[in-house]
Every structure is written in structure tokens, then in C-alpha cells.
Image (cartoon, rainbow, N blue to C red; front, side, top):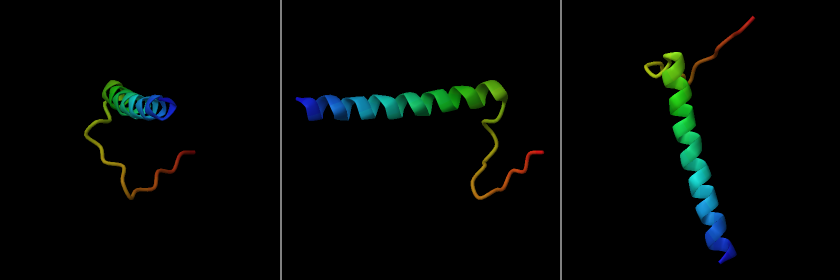
Length: 43
């Protein structure tokens, strides 16, 4: 039972993380950008 609860917790946390990341990118207008294999330098 404990393992089942842990698996459900990990699944729901992963899903929430994906949805929150998508929402933040939508709010900032960054959904069309692909940031893979890039270096971003901020000063």
C-alpha cells in the first residue's frame, strides 16, 4: 500500500510539474521557443 501511494505521488507530482511549466511558458509567451542545446548568457 505504501509503494502504491508513493507511485501515485510521483506520478501526480510529475504531471503537475509539466502542467505548471507549460502554464509559465504560456504566460511569458515562450511556448514557441526551443531551448535545447543552447547557451543563454545573462548579465
